[in-house]
Length: 555
Image 1 (cartoon, rainbow, N blue to C red):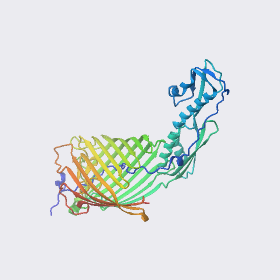
Image 2: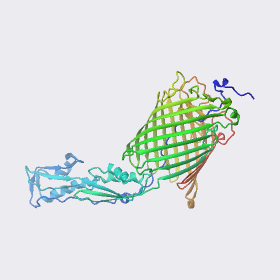
Image 3: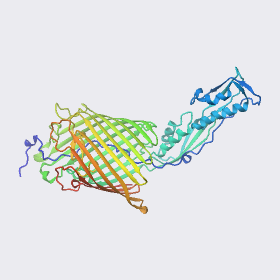
Image 4: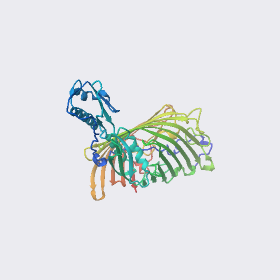
């Protein structure tokens, strides 16, 4: 058998295996419906309206009132009270009539959620037949947080402070408490609104129990690239409250027969509305394990890091909207061990040392809405490649100077009590030739099932997926459910340069899956995908035959 020399490898042979596409990992879209929240009266017991006492000289004698002025209101304008005031002006009224009006004004506040606000009739002498009614709007005097262990009480206090600005509104306050109840750092939460030291001031006493913030996640699957080994072993260690500020750190290690990867990330919340700074870095090395190419000894090193900022615009129990900006850098280098060649370009755009580098500024927009019956989530990202940090720049062909848009969407809908419909979409559009790190991948367990991982790698792509999850067995003793999942996946991919030979550009797969879920700790999934579009590839493994499995256990 004659092996290609270094000179003959100046053009990569068509049959040479490609190392796996290695983009910077993405955060999954939310896919959990809204859990059942405690009833409002459990989070915040009902508060009796605090109606201030009036200090007007009481008399049952009637007197003429031409106008009524309402002062002190920042919530309502005088026009908002016009319907209440109209029956009492330009006529003879008594003090009891004014008390009725005062009560009506207070009730309007209470109906709008301002239960600690109210109206009084202050001491006054009628001038020009004008009566003044004063509104005293309620406010929080203090927020007392108890029950904290490692989490700084200021974490809870500042988030409640966002929804308790004067005048105090219990509806907004309840929304904030519900949002805190959904915080992964909070196990249970209850609050009590108590009278403050001054009229119409209150003290909110919050008792919270911390959740366990340390997570160990173990997983095993065959979702990897066949060229470096489909069998993936993964260990994730995550601490959600490293220093008491709600800052998160995660360390992940992933291994296949031909690759090792380490990823570390740190996220620091910088505001009560969960604006956050994020740093992430990772390193991986890969080696082609295909026996037919052992003599070439193909390998690669990949390193990346990114700095990002996420700004939350809307954050309620049912809806989130956020914007983000990230600066990322990724360096990939390929090698040939044959004849000790060493660094060598094996992918389009790499330099003579096999190095390709991408520096990009990424602008993201995320929106999600959820209830107890559905989850709807979208993410949009615009990536602008930059000539910074030794990024790859070529006169022709792919390099780090590009503009691309990536859009992802997911809709989960409960159909009846137990059946769930899941629809997913993923798209990438660009007019530029992209380096391999930025290309769109089709094929694999998380893409089009029935094909191997990264069966198609192109500049542009579109993926649509649908699956129906129906329970077929339950084991209450184990808190376990077995679901049957028919699915249909379809995708198309193409290059920006139409002159490049690409071969097939569409994949369609269908099949059945089984999912076993046992509480919140254990999940096991098995999928059998049937390719509906022929693709020339050897079926010498489970993945190439459309068989996928995964086991995940969380401690």
